Image (tube, rainbow, N blue to C red):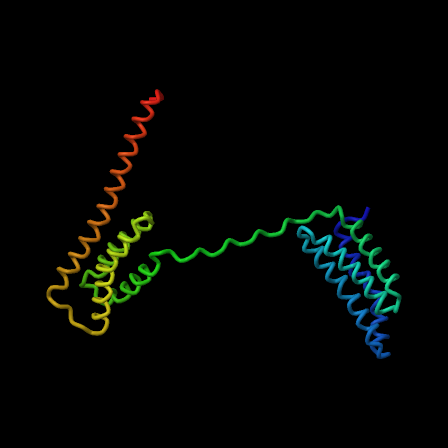
Length: 238
């Protein structure tokens, strides 16, 4: 028995007899026959590449390529009639199918997952990153702690998509205000005396909101635990 490895190399060798015919038709100016010879060389090489790739369905595709090569060479290169070309093509297709039907094929690669779409608060995070770049030039001001507190609140809101409307109201006040402050500072403005107190107030407000959101979730979990416990006891499982 011929191994699968050697059977794959039988396909390109089938095109070797066409090499001298290709040169003859080239110098003789027989363009139609030359086209048939070129296709008769290309298609077995394509079939060889398909067999070496070895994905599911490649053996059938290689058989079709070999059948097409035989039919084209017979019709164009040898000038045979359509019936003879079809018969030779069917014979090459059938022979190739029988020769390679036992070769294992790898499954086709899975489609890559689509890239994740933008999240509702991605724009706010990008704005916070730009504020952080400005804050690095003003280490004495508490711009970075305020931005970090706002980012922590965004994390809480992202876990609760049903509260995005509240998140937008929070951002409209805190993030917009912090962004305007950073833009003025970047433009060369001198920090006014009341700015540190305002930044501290904004940080406290963001921290307090995050704490309130977590307390609400903890309270909701406690209610669910009590309801589930009462139901289990009511059903006789407790």
